[in-house]
Image (cartoon, rainbow, N blue to C red; front, top):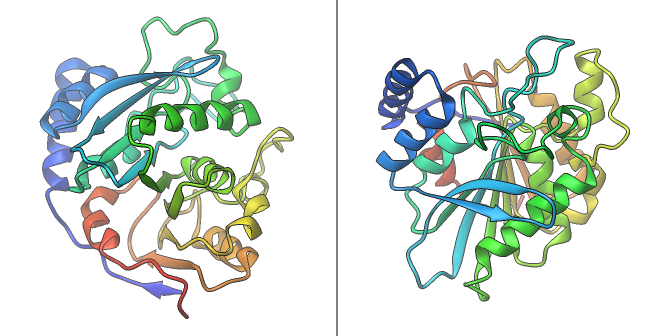
Length: 280
């Protein structure tokens, strides 16, 4: 496993913006609106067959390549046993990664019911961010949202990035789509059953886990990034997934000192610069 040291960039400014706006508004939705405006990302909603998903994007046609970010699980639980009433993340790492990406074409997708409302629509039951958050229905909705986002650019190829639980969604999408040319994950839950067992929480029988499609991705260039101090999704998870692919296309990197919710945007430009290939 390769190890690199954290580097710091404009993400410190991101954190200041998030802190100040959160203190002023005490509303993660308003914080996100202020933050994304400063970052040049435009708000949009994607209507799928059964739910609307919030997104932000920065597009500069012509579009031949677009990088799409999938958010983590968000504020799914108030405590170990009590689900949250609203999954909107208090620390939207996936959104911060998208904002730190200076590529011409970037799209961010929140998970179901994140950054929506208030009030939340009736379809937003706690199951969507707890036991059903990796269900086939959720993956299908994310897939439909991506298809809608890239529909104006039929020749465009997609690079997928998933943070935390968004990693398993991204892997599932990469396995089913034919326009995906690479996959990156950050602190990614790539083996749902293994992570649940680590934390002694209930199994999720309806979960579509990334590791179940690992062999389907054996020819796809990938980079799976873990935090050296991440106790939520430790580096062993990425290593298990890498082994499951059975090829050299899946690379793993451990960043010393980084925890699950650390300032990943600070190290992101350097990580994005790493080439993706299937060479040893």
